[in-house]
Amino acid sequence: MGFQVTSLNDTTTLLGSTRHDYYNVLKWMSLANSDLLAAIGGLVLPLLGEHQVVRKNTEDCLRALYKDCLALNNELLKTKYLVGEIPTLADFFTVGEMMFGVMVFHTVLQKDYPRVMECFYEVYEVPMFKDVADDLQLLGIPFPTLPEDDK
Image (cartoon, rainbow, N blue to C red; front, top):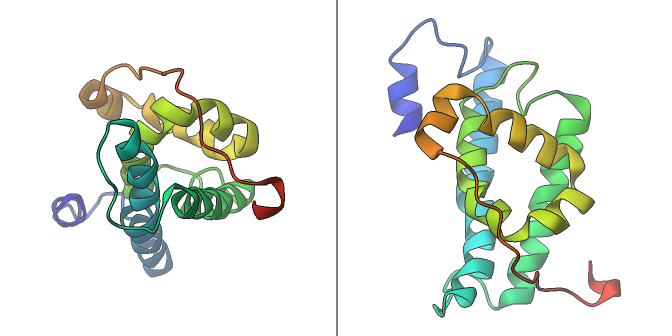
């Protein structure tokens, strides 16, 4: 829906400035929606007493979260934001999908994926986002772990 609403404005920079940017916005939004959100949900839902249904177990979700965060971190080592030097819909969407994961697992994410978290906080603080999302509440909930050789 956000993509459709954003595309109604012919002069917006939220979809990038080239056709290549446009497809990269779609790529990162797809990753956030289909993979990252499912992994975060699979880790957070059991903490709330709910069963996750997308992946096999918590370890599977944790592996997926690590893989997705590594992909984001690697991209953000090359560019300031996911699709270049200014925030796009991909950044706002990904930050929105990550919010609850960051609230719960911020300590590990900050340690292992510093560029992801740096970008997360920069985008979160953009007034048009923060006015809707409000202040971020960081929780002190223990993070599940994988065996060292399984990361």
